[in-house]
Length: 216
Image (cartoon, rainbow, N blue to C red; front, top):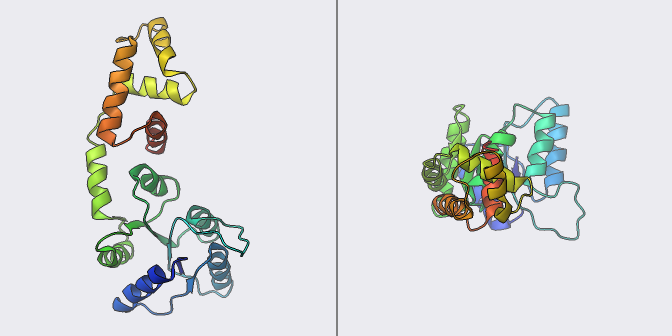
């Protein structure tokens, strides 16, 4: 089952499947249609083996219950938990992609970029070999980001920020709990270091990333 609202990308996926000798695929442009076809296939005893879906779908005059790929995956997994899922999207933020593997248990992620047809073929072969697949460029980014070791101090200040404590007020908590260093400059330097290493520009991005990977 292919859920892709851009016709050129949809055709590209079709050709990739044909090159692998995979027949009997269904192609739709809306998430609701994908879910309906998967539900009907289950009812008829001929379930789909694989769902390939984009993450983001443009809204138009057709009213939809499912607004994006994440909602589609969640709904499909409730119907057919064992279906293989590959996400094919232009999304490049590692925290978002990593969250798909952690929270939705997707089997593969292919970023729409150079050589994406080759990567999609590799992903399909990998998931049917019961392996997960991540586009090489994102895998490299994951390696860079995993190189940062979060200290107890890091986790403390990120947790406080996530709870709504203002950055300027964090030193008060640190002093009250005898945590050193406790100066505002130390907090700022540590936050700036983490954002630089992880490629973020805002504290909110850092917080979201740490939630996605289970640090907080």
